[in-house]
Amino acid sequence: MLKKEFKRKDVDRARNLLTGKTGASSETQVGYKKKMVSYKEGDIWVENKKTWTIKDGIKQTISKMDKIKKEIFMPLCCPKCSKVMKKRLDKPNYKAHKTCFDCVIDFEHKLRIEGKYDDYIKGLRLKNNLSQIDEAEDYFLALANVSNDGYVSEHGDVERWVGGVDVDKITTDISIAAKEARENIKKELTNKED
Ligand SMILES: [Zn+2]
Image (cartoon, rainbow, N blue to C red; front, side, top):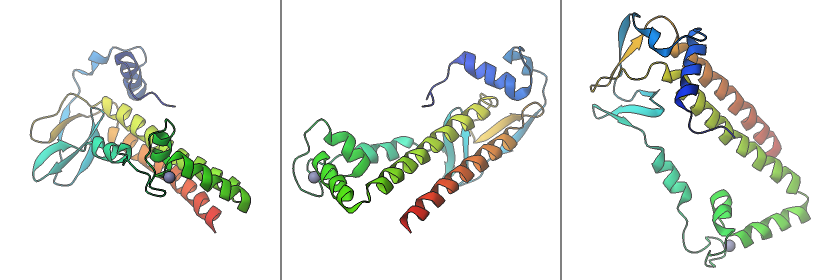
């Protein structure tokens, strides 16, 4: 599992790695020329570990909370068997399968009888890999963009350092790598279901 947070020290080290300044202080960026990058309506970019967009002309973060809230929200009763979900294992199972724990046990038992259990486990593993790729992508995008932090105007403009790290290229490379990894897993998932 990747760490969700990284310490100032790690950030400095990563910044120095990215800029090729091993051992250099992070303050030595003074003297680089700056250029302005303007973002327009609908653009999405990562900055200061947050994903930003411009909506209705206002720069704002895209909150992952909306997504997370939906995922954690658990109804009182299991949508499949209508029993009240109050067991300790109901919550993690609802998160993963959208049914109560008993329904998951029944479902997996049926799969075993039908000889489909191994494929099912493989599918779960692949889906888990997908979310790990998402996490890794977020982590590396945040790291790459850390080297450009702190120079954001209130109007959605970002002052970017010219020279040193090519954040746009790194960001693109990371996104491409993550996309390829995701596509490979999705391919495997589809083959499995053939
Ligand atoms: Zn149930």
